[in-house]
Image 1 (tube, rainbow, N blue to C red):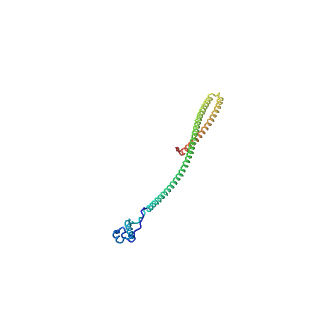
Image 2: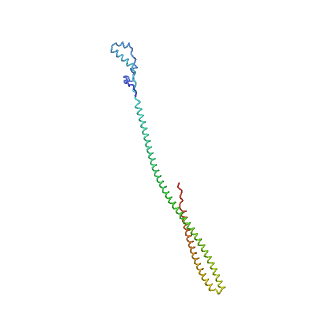
Image 3: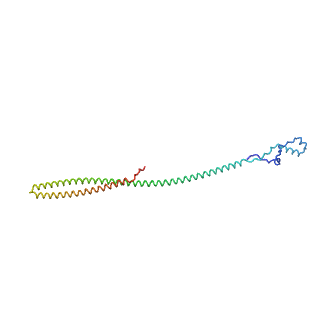
Amino acid sequence: MSDAPVSSPSKTDAKGSGPSKTDAPVPSPSKADAKGSGPGKTDARDSGDVKSNAPAPGPAKTSVLPIALGALSAVLCIIIVVLWIKVSALNTTIVESQNRIDQFGSVTAQMQAQLDEAKKDSAKLQTQIDDAKARSVRLDGLVDKTKAGAAELQTQLDKTRAISNGFQSQMEDANVTSIRHQGEVEIAKTQVKVMQAQLDEAKADTVRIQAQLDASRIDSAALQVKLGKAEEAIAGLPKVRSQN
């Protein structure tokens, strides 16, 4: 606000657009003396001179400060509204981000649980594979033992057959000898009977060993079938990927 006092409009301004007192001609001293030399008139003339020498009152000036304050208040209000909108949008974005973070956390926890379960299943599967491999190794050992037993039985059978063939040759030799030596028929018959008994015993041993060999071969075939099934089961199990 201006510090200069606001003067009231002059009488000429109130009446119209006529000239103000400052525009009026100043009376000369001779005319003032011609009119009269009284004290009252002299004071009136002096006061008129004072009025004519005073500055003319200008038009009323409107203060700029209230307008500036109003404009500043409007700008501040607009800034506050814009900031409030931005803060609201930022809060909304923060809430949405927090919701996404929570969803991502729940999904991560669920995936971690699934990963832990997959690790447990993988460990169980690895244990099953190890057990199957151990069984396969045991079956391989049993098969090897069975094969070794079958080979041993085959060797015994060959020996028994050789003995039986020897007995058969001896019996034939005895028969030839009995034919040649009629006098020794009874002795030969006795020897033949003994040899026959030995031959029967050898044949019985041969039959028994043959039965054992057949049973061993059957057991070996059954173990071979089990081994094939075990290998198929191992091949059917899914491969376990190494965990880093």
